[in-house]
Image 1 (tube, helix red, strand yellow):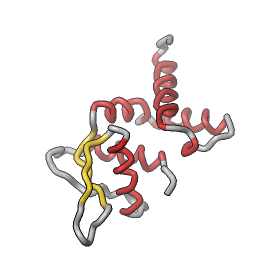
Image 2 (spheres, helix red, strand yellow):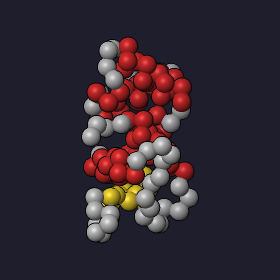
Image 3 (tube, one colour):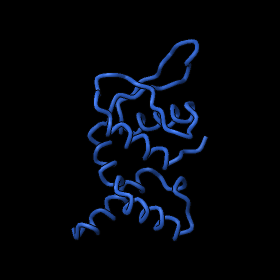
Amino acid sequence: MKRDMELIRKILLHLEEKQDVSNWDAVVIEKYDPKVISYHIKLLYQAGLIEAKPLNTKDSYGMWLAKGLTWDGHDFIDAIKNDNIWAKIKGGIKSKGLELGQVSFAVLKEYAKMELKNILGIDG
């Protein structure tokens, strides 16, 4: 399965808006298969961006539940939550002949920081 950065962004935004971070919940994103969402929750957990755990029951083997964002998760979503910045990031990547999913997470994170610094007028 390929990593879908649009879905990653939607999951992070969803978790940021979550009011009760004491509960482990299945994340539901309209128009996305629950198994695909679960896979991306696992990826976000592995990247250290969210608190998550596998739900290991007979009926739900391989499904992941999410609780909330980590510090790094908040930092990343703060850099990409603005639709204009997100569009600039996607456009910049596309202008180099790449697709969003072809850029490593580390590079995407640095690029998002760079775009945010440019908008804020911060050098370096």
